[in-house]
Length: 255
Image (cartoon, rainbow, N blue to C red; front, side, top):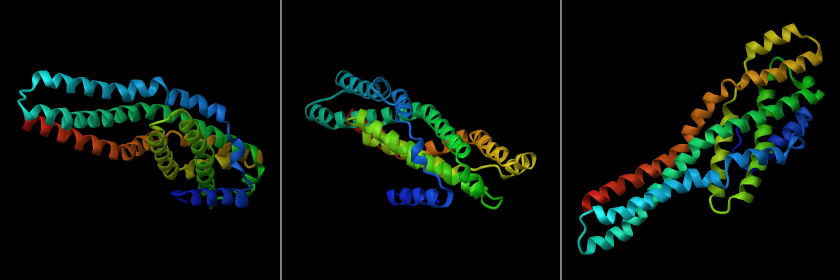
């Protein structure tokens, strides 16, 4: 089940409640996620990783007046077009820096989400009655999607929108896209599940196995995170490449 809209999230929530008897929204802890976003976002975070490249780009733009061989109308062209191209390149490069730094912190958020899921699977007895050999991988993946889309993303969105007046929409969209891709790609090891369940036939033991399996599932998530970050960064890299190319062409033609 892939989540692409608010209606998909509503269907996921209803499915978790009806089929598994789980209301994952009860596991929200806004204070915990707020602590993550303190590290993840503001205020020094954005200043260090986004504004500095912009300021460096503006400084290079000013230096250009002294090092470029400009005459007459070229000063006007450089003053207007050059400023726009330098700032655009600085902004997109700053966003790339920000996303590179965010990858490390998002890993902490994913581990936090796995922790919530581990608690949910361990605490709710209804899950054990619904997990069967033929559907256990699907159930675990469904619960993880629920945690990501019903718990983690809404809380992060709220904190980001409250603390980011200008770039909040961009950052929120990026974080949401990465977490969505991660939730789509997580897989649970069927062989490991079967081996562990053979060792523990009793219901509490089985629940413990499902919970412990989440820890092993996190091993492959780092690779998934790298791939999803590459996908999420692609538009930023594209715009940076375009703006930087036009900047170099402009400087070549005007000099």
